[in-house]
Length: 75
Image (cartoon, rainbow, N blue to C red; front, side, top):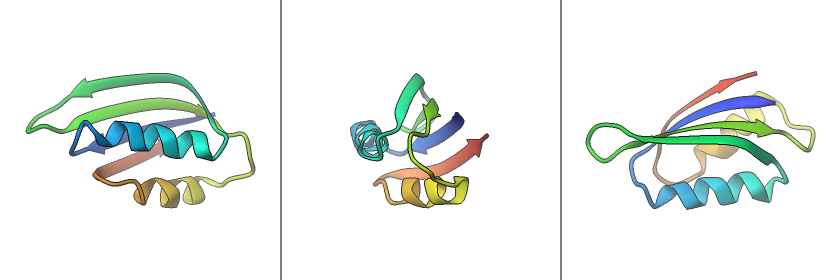
């Protein structure tokens, strides 16, 4: 299980983020979304990784989602 915190600069990017996670066959156990300043949103996820993937691999994959400003991972 991995805790992920992502800051997005557009609310519409949330759907792309969730789609990207599901494409990797990962399971989202928990998701919390909150608005922060200037139209940005913070998304906190708890993900069960279903395939062999390192944290650097997950980080690299999440950087390719549009409108991602910040990514933080915690194992």
